[in-house]
Length: 215
Image 1 (cartoon, helix red, strand yellow):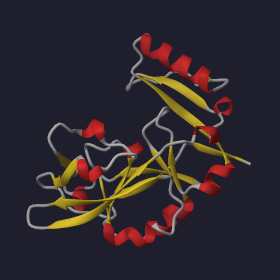
Image 2 (image 1 turned 90 degrees about the vertical axis):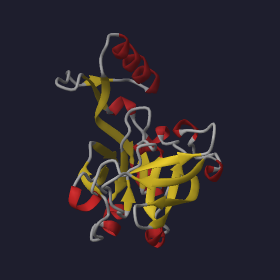
Image 3 (image 1 turned 90 degrees about the horizontal axis):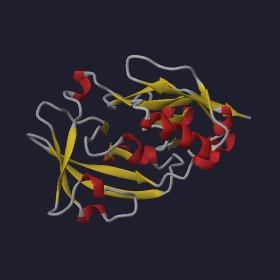
Image 4 (image 1 turned 135 degrees about the horizontal axis):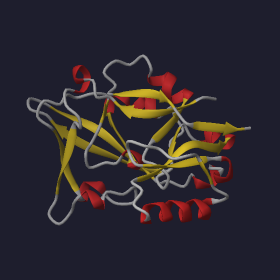
């Protein structure tokens, strides 16, 4: 089964402005308090579209790193119920625009996918934005952490995956997943992609990924 990376659209005809949304918080809270295991309605008052931004099926929120979850129009709820999503929390968030407001679902995920990632068959590289180093092999999760941390100590900007090897069981269990400790991307199965591929104004695009599925 193919795996795709979710990329939020920057097509101004679809989203208007990028990012699209920021959250308004109750006193003493901010984006660092957003987690899958908190009561979101005690932290976030509502979301607000940036000037010039448009409503789309999925919204990009500046307060919400990609790996934490997704914010989607409530009219897509039925489609998401057909998918195998990670354990987490489902929250209703009101999003206010200039002339209207809509309810969106914010699905926050608990990430426990590292057991499906084969570090010894994956490749990484040191990345300074304009230049990339040679592919680097790692033997284990701990070896990955050591090489990543040593790279940062030497002033390397990023330690990014070139290829991520995952067990096929991951795709049997989940249609959406990510690996926050190796990158901020969210990945989806072809089942996820096919379900939404024909929907207009979705606000995201599906890009071929660096995931290699091991049989």
